[in-house]
Image 1 (cartoon, rainbow, N blue to C red):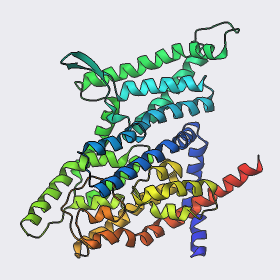
Image 2: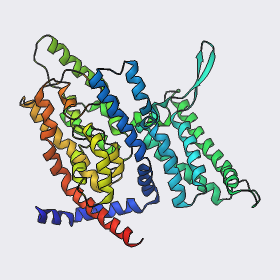
Image 3: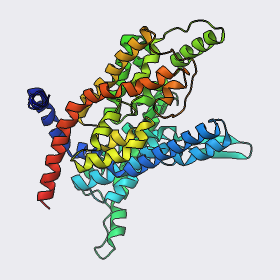
Image 4: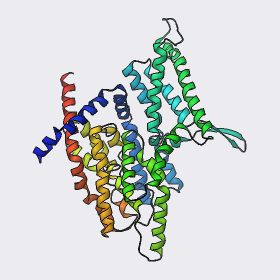
Length: 434
């Protein structure tokens, strides 16, 4: 086993991944994304904790999303993960400005937030009984808006650097405090950014008849082909698309789920009606979508977290400890952004492969009646096992995710060891240079 792993680790394929990973790591933009993600780990974990508390409260006190108390408990989440893209826009611009020396990092962060809000959540005037009010749609400011936040933050900093390199600033005497100088230096670059991004927003709104913003347009473009792929083979493509989206900073589950919602509800409703009449339930390919993340979240990453608990890498061990409890609720943003899996070519392979392997076993389990077909539609965050039990009320469905942990472990293990070795060497090297 160890000899085979050693040969695999030294193969040309893995060597190519290492070189690609080094290019990602050494690139100012890519390293900024990794740093920016790490900077927001506290907010991401806080959002995960809130989700778990609300989920447990729902189970214990039998409250639903329609209940006022549920909405009150969930409200803090809207100010953490619900607007995570805003925090990301600031941290990415801040760190990227430092890396490429493009002026004041703080001013760059503020400009990035303004530009991101312009393209993702433009202010709309809504008529009311007493006049009118300004409204911001925050639906694009959560995890599904991360990809746009990345684009806006990096490009806005580049626009600022372009202006500064050409001395397009308002000059003040040297006796003026540094903070004031930095603020005035950001005025012209900020104005150029606002004109650029606002112009883009107006253009997209005009061409789409006010239907799309830049953020919603990207989601629509990425999601359009998915609705034509509802079949067993198509579901494999859909799951791979969701994973690829995650890899590039797009909330893949949200993008795909928004497109899968109608066929999913249709399949569940059909079986619900059959169950009410005492008739046999029917299989639908959309049920296979569950293979995407029932063992720790998207990519079935719980085994990765369990391995990381005993890792010699300080980074992996710290992230694994913080991610353990959220993973049992299939919340794995801390894993995706903390290890990270995002923009990590080595971990991309098992991240793609694990859900497909699980889907194969899930299809066999349905085909040979080893587990029950779902008929109860539940949109709620539930602990691992319970989330597969509730739609079917069959104990066999509850234990399947746990039985699949060793299988997912085998998928993740070789790539985990390769990545762990790289991080350990990096950490030792950094320690020696201190």
